[in-house]
Length: 143
Image (tube, rainbow, N blue to C red; front, side, top):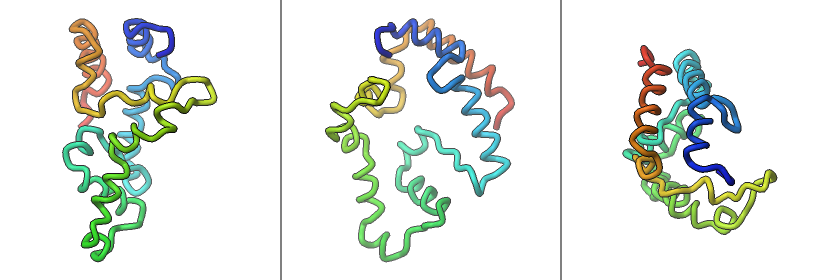
C-alpha cells in the first residue's frame, strides 16, 4: 500500500488498476480456463482451503500427479505439510517479517490475519457495497 491510504488503493483496485492488472478479469479468466482445461488449471478458493485444508491439499497433490500414498497418510505427512504451510508458520518466518521485494515493498504487507472475512476490518460500508456490486457485475452468470 505504501504511502497511499486504504481509500486511495481501494479506488484504484475498483477501477482495475493494480500491480498485476485488473483482479476480477484475472480471476474470471482463470475460472473459465479451469473449466475448459481441468487437467492443466486448478482453481482453488481461499475460503474452501481454510474450511477443509486437508481435502484441498490432497486435491492439489492429485492434480500435480503426486497423490499421497497410504503410508504417507498414516504417518501424518498431510498434517505436517499443513502445519509447515500454515499462516502462523509462514507469517512468522524471518524473511516474511523483515524481508523486502526488489521493489522495496516489505514482505510483511502480504500478511494480515489469514482469516475469512478479515477484509471487513479494513473496508467501510460504502467500499463493501461497491466491492459487492463490482463482483456481482463481473461474475454474473458464472457458475
